Length: 223
Image (cartoon, rainbow, N blue to C red; front, side):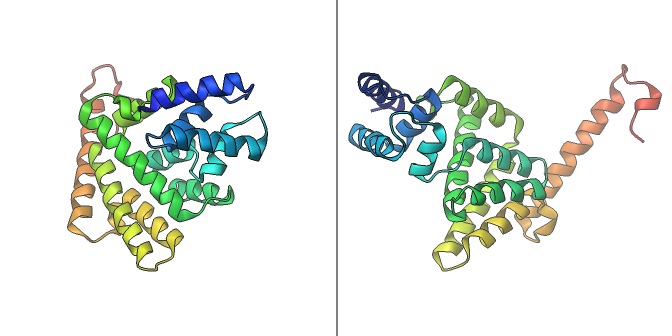
């Protein structure tokens, strides 16, 4: 079954059992079931035991052990902006919420993969669709973040998770990946050099566009 079908069954079950659960929480629950009605309903039952018949998105995230979508979006935006400090702050906030760095890395890899799929297809496919708001946010981020940034982040996260499986500290590995992704100048690899060149070309193109704009006054032009 699709995510939408599982969410529909969960919604009808919640209504029948007088369970108050918002659409975003239903969507996260349906997504986590990975195509299984039984798993979805089992987790819903677990949530009722955990928090009663009023279930918030935070409850779902806590039971599933996944990161808040807002933090994942913030982390990717920080990497795209070259702001390593902001990316590490998002990770710190996630850890303060009680989630471990390894899980955050896994969730971030899923987010980056979703962005890559949307960038390639030009739309949010049914398999990734959650809610209207979540789909719009995913589409918007896919449009504002460069595909090469997403690919580089995916590669670095893969390396980080491989290191964790070999016994390295999860948080240290993830922090290193985020810093390298946001600041290619900290990475001596050829791949990082290509990333730095691409970023410089994008910045030069933006400055040239402003300089060529006849509506920009002489005093406002960049030096």
